[in-house]
Length: 59
Picture 1 (tube, rainbow, N blue to C red):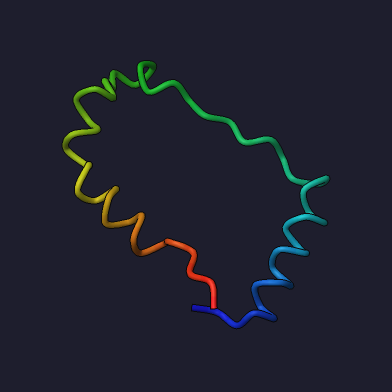
Picture 2: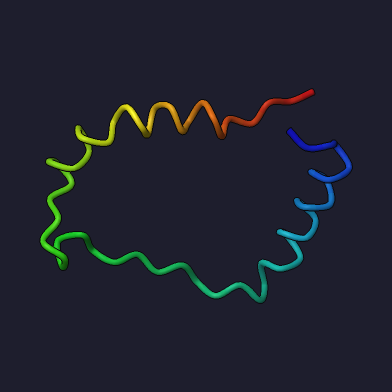
């Protein structure tokens, strides 16, 4: 958890920095021989847990 002030400043910075941010690039997993249909079930528990750890909680 962070303070409201911290969160507001971070959101402001994120918005201001957006114009200078390089576009995100995503590689196709197939290029690396990865089949997401096989990977997703193996990491499902972690993904579900991570969504709880990183959930935004308002004050």
